[in-house]
Length: 192
Image 1: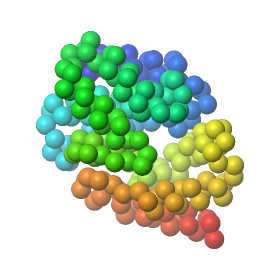
Image 2 (image 1 turned 180 degrees about the horizontal axis):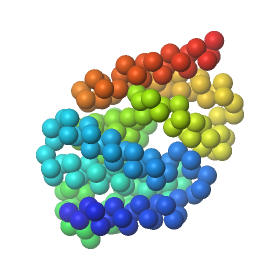
Image 3 (image 1 turned 90 degrees about the vertical axis):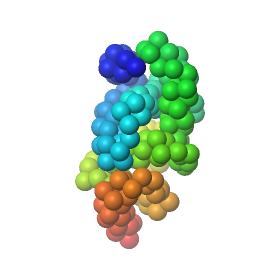
Image 4 (image 1 turned 135 degrees about the vertical axis):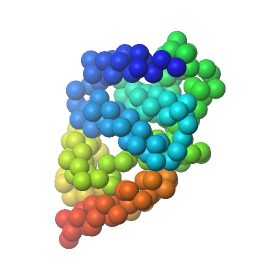
């Protein structure tokens, strides 16, 4: 698996071709998810091969945004299927990667441990100190798409999302739940 080669190509493609209005679904988000996936995977004790598959899934999980937001996970799977065979990935490895990508679709419904790890890595920021900084980027993006029209709409959406969200891996539960709860309390206080 030539992960480092494909990583350079995909990150450059995203940097050059992602629509500029995507303030949240950006190269920075992809790199953040790759970092998070590595941390969670190490803590969860996954094998070296599975770590490589996780990193590839994190790399590709939002490439579908090159073609638009609608059904971007399915499109991301198609892009992974197109590229990965040329970089030493077997079809069974690619199928695992596509499963992980689909596990990031909201509402998340991962079917196995690797899918749980990527799902948690994708939303790792929910339980971090930079939650509001990253959230502002998503607010800008959703405002641009006309999904939210005001800060109040946004806070209501976030409140509902955080109340319904749960982490899957023991690592994310241990490391992120408490802070996620604090972030939710801050949002609730803004809505009062």
